[in-house]
Image (cartoon, rainbow, N blue to C red; front, side, top):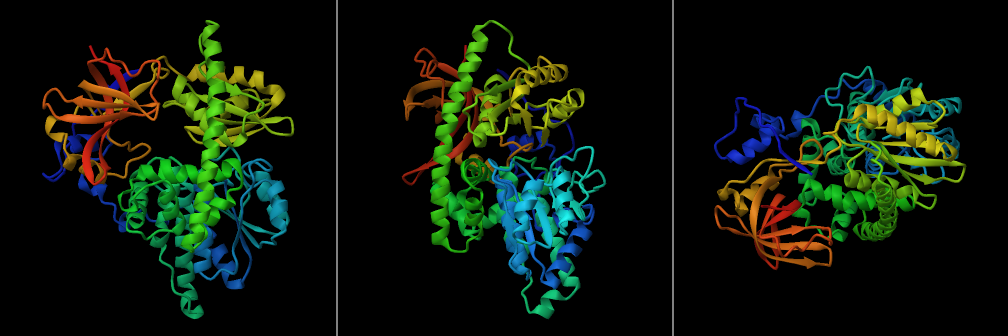
Length: 575
């Protein structure tokens, strides 16, 4: 494990004096040098105009609403897809659409996206306009099938396009080759938020709300969903996304949120007024995702759609149970994958640079999480596969910094066209389908491609820190300042620090977490520390008198008392 400190550029800054020097250093290392870049008011959102086909999409939807036509949303089975679908339905209803409906493919029967098979299912709902959310950019055959059945098709997506685009009536995607929108990092829910905002403007232009005596909806009311989907999909929190997330967080903290979001926070034992962006990613998101992984994402969508708090709690409890089941399945799969990894190491051969894991009994809905866990363990691009029932296996890939996994798969598909049935994704995550009979050949080809792309340094796990904390920063006020300085997330990481501490006490709690009493040598301040899921073969270590830690600083509240606590990401014995 390598520990490196984030570089801090020497640039002129425009921070007020009440911003501590440590926080200024944190901001500078993340490309922020002025308070203007931290101004998260809604008027600073990027204007929608540069989004390619946005006007066309708004016009198609406005025509459909005026004509009383049926609009059907085809979503995706993850948290971004659930929030996108829910936002679309709620906004269409508020704008006067007649009974807008949704359809989410069951991942075990149909797989991802708008396929011809899903179009056949959609036909039963007799839609005039079909809208994809968080999918569709790769659905060439599915869009064609929908058009042949007389449907108009509006694709809203954020995934990277392939060499060919579907022949939809409108495609709104910041990553469309003709799109000039400045932020390429919108989540699917961010895209449909912009589309619904443009639809409201178009209906306004037509005097629709006045003529129909419909109150004009406030798009800010949907920002709780936008914040949740954006954080849960782990897209980069560029300046525009930070505005969306921060505005949504403020609404949730004030209690102005969908009952389903509040209920999911409740079952996750979070105090609504104190939540952070990470709570959306680690508490709410996984419970929503669990529905799509194990059952049917409609449970998650209905949780977000309902206005009834009691019903929302029932859905939230069901989602919480799904999440418990997911964790149990994941634990078993991880144990099997780790055994395969140990067997490989014991054989004495070097680990492949691109690793694949497969077991015919693994659960399709959990392979993405398994790939993430194994990527963290061996610090290599990893694909985990599970069997389907038609001679194919589905894979979920997770990558490391510097290896664009979707581009790697694209190159593999060009070199070995017989190996990949279909694929799609982002820089850090992707999905694919291959023939089970091709698994061994695919595994070797994947390793060859990755081996061409990676360096020795990239294959060594590295933790980036914001350096040491000054003695005066070990305070409740500084910890609170950090909490309020977010939203933190992907590509705008929550600050973490490194330093050496004296160990006064150490013990296990809940049989797997290491609880520490520490002293900071320079100031003598006493601190609690906790490291979750430690290696029980190494810890506790009674011989360790000093530890080098990489940690986050937080406020731990217990029985009305507030204390500083170090949330430890990495620890090693210091000499």
